[in-house]
Length: 84
Image (cartoon, rainbow, N blue to C red; front, side):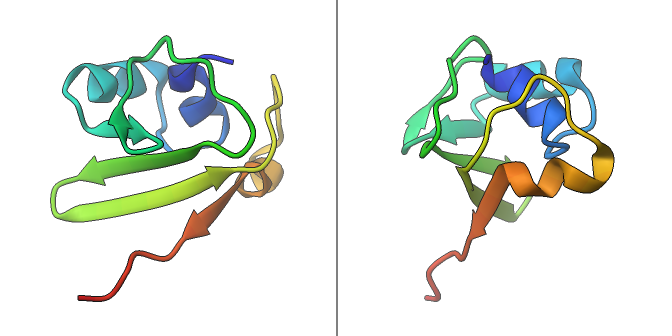
């Protein structure tokens, strides 16, 4: 599944166009490398999203074409950022 679609379906980002723009601006990386919207997400990938001064890193647990809003959070696991 494409990265922009995964971000939308998992509800990490509300709209696919916003996810696509975030990838183009370099705000999203996968496994430590900047990722394009067309990147094929795999189970175990670590996705990092940057929004302002907030950084979220998640690990992909499931990939599904459609999911209920209440089950969307089960598609990933948030990884705690290291304390400085």
